[in-house]
Image 1 (cartoon, one colour):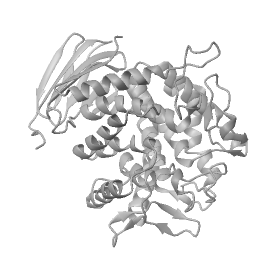
Image 2: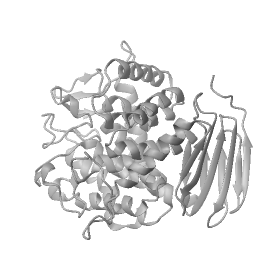
Image 3: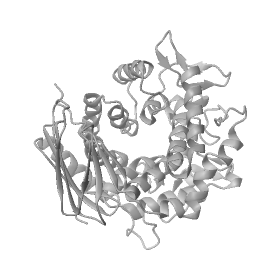
Length: 425
């Protein structure tokens, strides 16, 4: 399939995509050495490794760049590393030949581990099934066992108070285990963090879509408990986590604050809007120190229709031109799937589209977008017109555009839809 391209009335957008595509593809390590797994660099540029957290977040952009073999090999490798002796945690980092990275691993009971990563892997791997429709994401023995254990045996091994949510020791030592992705807060460690709950919620919902409503019921229970007990009316925000004395901490938690809205854990009501206001304020007052953390923010705000905020932080990533691999991979994803609002289900031959173009962008076209076996061209003019062309594919594709309805497009066909949504002012 041809290489993906982006064209726009904004030269800034076109240049950003060209840079991100070229830089991300330069990180591919599949053929760099004979023993390498299909893989790409995912972690510090100074470390020849791929990290669990980074791969989970880079996988969406990697798919758009045609790196499905790399996504599958790396995520499967992490899944196979989660063993009983490691209490069902996956290994944190590998070298490109699949060897465990000793920098982050001192033994089976002393290695870097963070609770959110356990659930992130399940969520993002099943998200790849939605993009590709490749049954290996469901049928591979290592992945299938991992999905089940991540919300089963892993939770049972680390849920010491029986509430269905695993706890960390609360020491602040990532070699013992952290409750959160926020490594900047080691001086104020948590035993449970909101990002861990949020990614457990996301994993359960992803499992529910493929394996039955039992997982959906568990997700609903976790969300209801969170909404009922983690909200502080006086401050107008959700807690970032629970401390070693079992009290809730309502301070600014970086990832522990914004991953809740990113996965939908915080709902869509007034409390969520107040909390997003808090997140936006804190990002300006106390931004994260690491560029990796910023790479989540467009997804947070696109999900809740705060498209100008999403664009503000996407521009921050673009302008950084940072060499951290997660930046280029996520810029690819945000510029295509984020701005165009793509939600695929390749196995069901469906795609939902909902424009998130900000005022700065009047027109955006992404060509050679891969959804399963379909090769697509998706063009948007503001938020009012969407045109979808199916260059090729295994059959008809059903496309839903915002509230404008559903169309079935045959290979070689084009549909142009005009919605009633007004352009942002």
